[in-house]
Image (cartoon, rainbow, N blue to C red):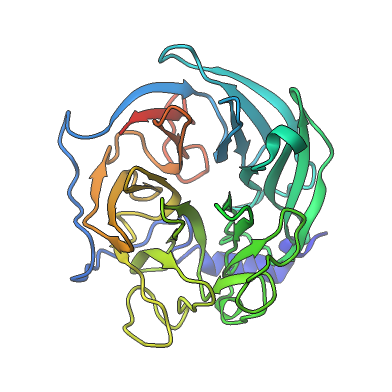
Length: 369
């Protein structure tokens, strides 16, 4: 029996789920002067959902695009890896299963999480996955040969695992290195262990070594995080991250190499020089943010408990006033990505045990910004 399923872990989980985790509702309605507006755009204003490209999915989590325009999607609990062929018009695409990641131990918030397509995919045909196993969380990779996923190969192992707060987002940066988000697995002290892998953003080479130029000479890029599940690079190469709070504040952070983001000493803006304050905060009932994407001067952030899509304008390194869209219209929103045609693909997460699924959930929505 793996480490995740020990009696002690189950007892700890019961306590954790009484508080706010990645997707767990909180009773907080606290606001602060630095909180963004919670207004929702009116009918017909702003971005519009123009199509559903896939339906009937089971907890879609990771989403990235191949050079030929097809999408790679992971399902958290089934461990399935799907390919979606976009339609010629605005109907549903063709969904096919190309394989499964056999190491996956799906339990609670754990399972098959993020996916990233190699920046050299045309040459190496590699897909990278963040997978929760019985013993740890890992980054693995496998070749996609036509419509068949090959055997997985470990890239980075030994990331602490948990029933909750497993992080799991992967993104290749403009520097060609792989950025990996991890959670503190419900154990706050792990975020304070600077040299550990939990509660961090990691930066590694495609083969899993610490990337050159990392601030501490190891895999750690930033630390003191609770549970980061959204990463996006802007046009200037700055890294932005969305992070789950506990009871009070979710965060949008501008990531600076080597900086300490303060968890669990501070939640939200603490104003202490030792810690990097967030650029924006939200009450947890308005966000519970997972996916994050950048397009033409704006960040787009998906909300789980908030059940809305946030648009956040950027002015250089400054995040402006956000606007919320689709509040409650499609339920829990997990992941947002920019498709090759410039539109947004947004996944729902209503079949994850915390939503109220419609008959065709889960879906991937196409949004015209």
